[in-house]
Length: 30
Image: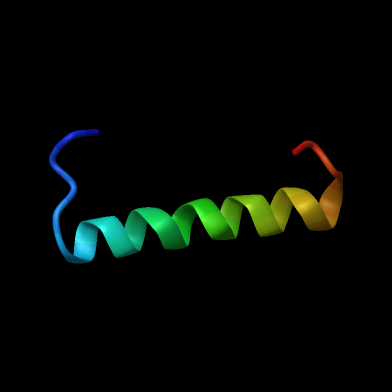
């Protein structure tokens, strides 16, 4: 998880947001 650069960081953040949004819609776990 140390090789994130440029677009990879953006994709990683988008994935986190997507997972957080999905889990938030189904059940609040955060």
